Image 1: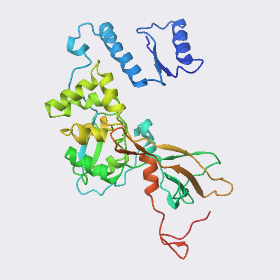
Image 2 (image 1 turned 180 degrees about the horizontal axis):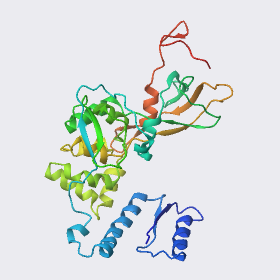
Image 3 (image 1 turned 135 degrees about the vertical axis):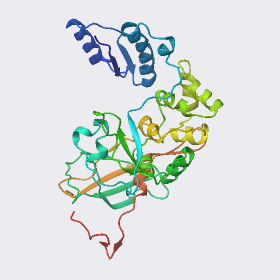
Image 4 (image 1 turned 90 degrees about the vertical axis):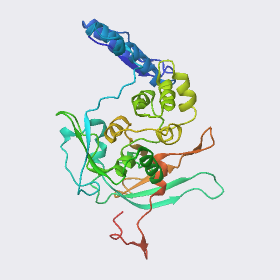
Length: 349
């Protein structure tokens, strides 16, 4: 018993060919299709394609496997507090990001980079453009001589960015969180994986693990509706996430470049959401990949990155700063004295 959603771009000659082939092959092998094959177009609104397919899928699943379901269960616009499988437990006497080991079996596969990433010192961070050339492009060199990693020329380097301190403090204040509170995220039942390393402080979690500056999907906003306490705000946000609210969402959120931070702090400033729900429901901050600029033969112990710093003006006149490029731009190399690093001396190149 199967139902598939294939995603691709309609510009390609073989649009969703693998999905279509898989659907046909499963039928030939005896599988019973319980719902139509969904086709998502990445050139348009892939999230909308998925949501439309999912909204039509669930009533069909309920009809087949739970024919006695109530009309409320069949409605995808019902507002209720989503259930989560984790608790946020305050930890007393613990330092920020206290050391804790995790087995690979206990780590969520989609966020394993949080657990396996290594730190690397910034040796060089300089501007490549002249003052007459608008914008910013940075030449950055990372020291990996004791990081336990190697690379080959033209490999990609995955960078885990951090949200800026000002936004983190404003968001914590808007939600009523103590940014210095140290907590641990614990699964409520066995078999659930850890989402990110804890214990850590609320500040570290908001900086390192939560995508607060990305444009949130409608599905994410829908899960957050119950936590908006102002009735007018709740009704407005619910309208954006309703079945007929796609265009309102496009006009209000997507076209305006509104981030989750904007929505919580500025647009609907009446959120009251438990810490555990926020950490589970908000999308994870993803690594950014940069093609390594250096030669591994010439610089085996250093990684060179060439980073274009993103700064764009939104329709309302405010600025959008790229999360990762702005983060990298802000990193300072260790102080030097007479050309020698004062932290531990210059590493091999």
